[in-house]
Length: 292
Ligand code: UTP
Image (cartoon, rainbow, N blue to C red; front, top):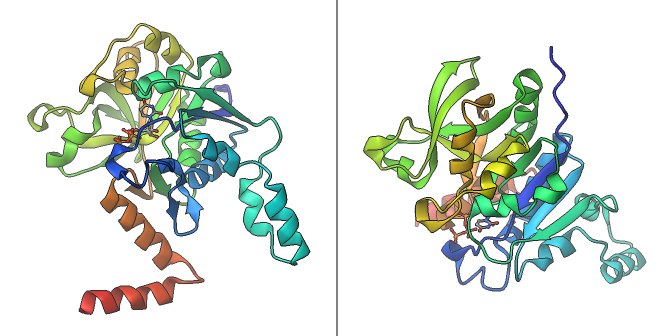
């Protein structure tokens, strides 16, 4: 088997405005909204670490510094907790190895493609992962680990996909599927962002997780605006197809679109119901509310 350069860096674009969640996201970054008791960004960082990622690159913007604080040491909190004999293990996932978290700034939110391009100097010549924290992926193993396993087989570029009803495709990036490599791996022959339903090449949508080769940065460099007047990552990836291997991994697990209000509520309910410490209590509450 060919040895592919390992994936050690991940870019987390967190500079979006989160307008669908206003007014909650006026002063609080969308990525810090909690699903039960962990902010969205924590789930995404944990998923990346599980997949062997070592370097965390946040593309932040104005009003987003609390995301970086979340992964810092909170001296006052920790010393007070220690004095009071409180269990501090709850903070373990928020601890970062010094130097492992890097932030770059996207001054103006010109689109996801532009946000990724802002990380070009840190990504350098290495293949890298991208995780959109507002898409919560729940599975065992996690989505990025499933993708890294597929990458170790085929290399090149990979995106995570899932199937949606055909009439919903125009809200998403959609793939044109090619040859089926295995049960979960498909070649990608084309990509289109937010196509009209009648023009969509499939009902397989891109779902917030990517492994890309560094050449995407050069493609983004000269790219104009696409759908919605934004610099789209999908357009840059589409231009790479044919020059580099491109595959889609169908994620075995659940995806919650936490950038939308109903997706957020669904994720909260689903994860609360699964929790050992509160599942039965939450189920009883849900049943009581539904019976009204
Ligand atoms: P969204 O499409 O969800 O946009 O971005 P948004 O601005 O966060 O939210 P709405 O649509 O206004 O409610 C997908 C991901 O890309 C990031 C977002 O932070 C989110 O993680 N993003 C988007 C950027 O970092 N910069 C951008 O210019 C656009």
